[in-house]
Length: 500
Ligand code: BES
Ligand code: ZN
Ligand code: ZN
Image (cartoon, rainbow, N blue to C red; front, side, top):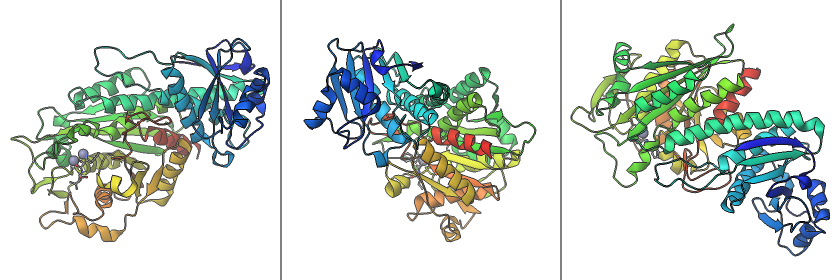
């Protein structure tokens, strides 16, 4: 898709459709909507009077212009109540518009800058939101069907009449496009079936990304992991015939201050069968997406490299399958993690915390000063927060608040759950230092805190995306299947930290 920014009049664009907007409850529109309404002899105000246009968020009304103005059609997009208007409304409405027009094979259109007249949203951010919403809302997985799907949007022009705003709008579009590409990459990786998306394939993709950029790549193979004594990760990998990979991507944005850094660590189980504690067959196919954490940290690096913030970022993706087999680890086995901690593997399906324990120890050993791990860790998080909100867990209130704030700006909802010391009792083992499950109570918390044990004193946040990394339906900028959560939060976080 070509995304352009133009100084001019929306009504004069030579496109198949133009998009104007309306807040809920407004009967006499102003700005561009007013100008277009006048040219159409009051068609929009008529429809408002008739109650056909109400301005509700996501409401779209298509008006054919019959040659009265150059654009063939006008879409009036509802923005909802003015009080509730924010960047995320722009993203969501932009995604809905993109799919609406694309479904009518209208793939060349222009839009006003939603929120352009609003004082609370800067032009740059409004433009960024249109880019993110449009690109992500029209995302399609280029899957494995023999017949290629129909054409996507070709051309979108953001038209602004105030020349003074054009540079900011262009900056916003560039940033939004960069971020949307990263999110789309994450969606692609997660949507890909597990027979394609093996740990080695994931490492190959990381190699391609790094070859085209300034990012530095290191891939630890099984031998290297053995040398480093990553017993927890290797225990999970034992049941599979495909080799595990630890994928490390480094971005150096502040070379004079190497301690100004953050580590983004992702769970990369390319298929989670449960291992010997095997999962029920119904729904098991969804476990191809158990590498969404790894996908998000790898993808975020692509955007971070382009946006080049003044901070150092290391992504670590711990990739392996979790399979049953003659050589698989068994419930009751004891493994020794890289930092020497002994772990009783009570349930082989609680494998995410095992691979992450070694990835986190590795990050600590590298001298990482802030850790954010991202994992499809527990089914229990969906019971706690539904599919709306990502769960956050932390040992550091400053960092977790920064993550939550980045999520707010990015349009990804994150809520903190507690990590009180009392919960530690639940995952003590009779035979080892820790056991990898904590029983029925507080499943997401014990899973998170298990990982936190390996962060030691390093400020750490864990994001449980088991419920938010996929969506059962398409809406706003979300498309059915992988959501790409929390790539946007990670990128916004890194940009925000670089400012300090
Ligand atoms: N990958 C799963 C968690 C998951 C569940 C992700 C649903 C996405 C959707 C994880 O490895 C797992 O199996 N967790 C167990 C932990 C339990 C054995 C303590 C779970 O949540 O049941
Ligand atoms: Zn599992
Ligand atoms: Zn898993």
